[in-house]
Length: 306
Image (tube, rainbow, N blue to C red):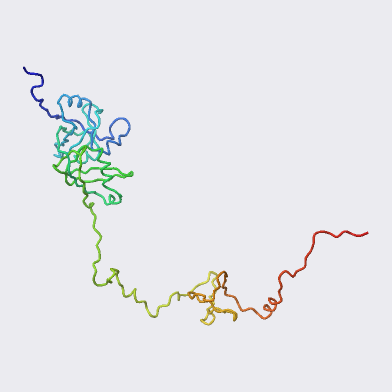
């Protein structure tokens, strides 16, 4: 006795040709989710045909531009396009060198699971990202597969970064859905490492450059020896070195900045001012002064006695 399904079903490939357009041409609201990923939008008839052909999931397709002989791989996001049309992200159309309304061949394929991939940023601005691997991992959630040689576009902080897929393993095209993939980054295009000055002539043991002109000042140099001008146009009065010395009284010692006052008494404050010496008349007035010796007055008027 023989039961049903005694022979294994043969998987037939999906192979169709459509008119391709960018996502911006898709009717309705703007679809940023399509632009940020690696999936396309196909017509409903494609879904009906795929279900009859017993396609292996996840659905992966090879896109081929026969004119330029350029190809790439992608997944499918939705089946809502108009019949005979497919909508692609802008970066994918640039890789395939496609114009609006050009013919595009779409075939169903089966790709190995990714284990390794290497990317090269096309701009040095990518180095400003604090954690590029985490950003890339988050953006690749909108991709189904990667193809060696493609230039993918990811968006982060309202800025688009382009990355070239330099290498993928174990094949030139791999599936990145639910996989453990190691990621490496190549230096960005145009990036040059900083040239470090080797220790040699003109450097000290500490690694700092030693310039004799800087380390040894001119013996005839005098700081702040320039001339000054007044705003009212009058000539500035020249001050001799003897006049520039501060005048101090005989009662206290001249204050020199940077030398501590060894006679300081804890709990006292001294306010040092550049004042002229007090005259003998002022000293006499100071000595004759007595606190709280003034006259007092009362606001109450005395009662008159009859």
